[in-house]
Length: 350
Image 1 (cartoon, one colour):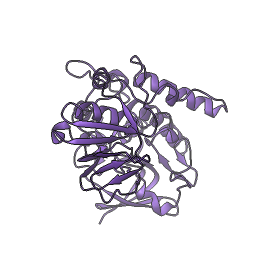
Image 2 (cartoon, one colour):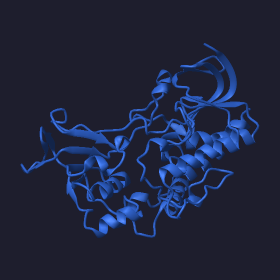
Image 3 (cartoon, rainbow, N blue to C red):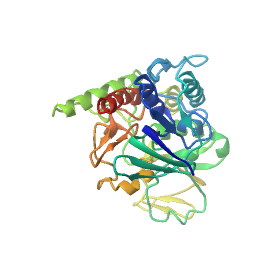
Image 4 (tube, rainbow, N blue to C red):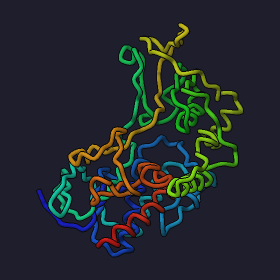
């Protein structure tokens, strides 16, 4: 096994890792990006084919290179995004090693030690940009292990063709649930269940406005002030397939069930519904297992940070996990702006 020295090591070669790489390259930093995937594109290469971004291409770009509009216009697809990210890393000749799976990050005297399946690195600064896709979350409900049908998560969904003629319960009140419901409802009998009544954003609101609102809220929080939350406007972006489902009368949600039976789901009032498949569109958690040896997590499961820098380990930065590591930093444009500030802080300390 090899052992290498580097000033900055980035874990993850998806959108956040590439944004960091762009600014590190521009700062003439000594860095390397380790990516666990076999091919470029990050988590986007594992999404279902019809998935659409919530913003036009010009608002879904990484620094230095605008995403070209997709053929035919509209919102970019997952495949279009993968092609863009692949071209991006080639354009800037980012030093990416793949597949390289990081097993652990440990403290050293003046560097952090990064252990992988292809060698060990010693780095003055580590940027963790592993995202959330690799940790799908499914809440526990009584009877979940007794269900005789099939259970899938958003991360497992590949399109509606599997569901023809089946009875499907879709769980979750956010964008993924609405987009999957819109598709599956064209070929199957669907029931949508949510913890609270879902709310569609106005048709003229998309990722552009959501990012601006997230930024204003972050700035207000830094100043000790209050600002509107994205959730104050609604939960679901009305992309064209969701609008179509709305017009078909499909977007009618039932309250959350209380338990799962061998053949379906049941509510507290005794009502039962038979189904063949349960699709859990219940989100993801940050993929932080490689950082466990540092013992940094708080009671909420997250690592306390100031900006992107870990409070308990100043040599570690976290990028792209959501608002707790920068406004809308789990989006393409949000990760880019957060990466710019993060790299400026890292290079100022050299």
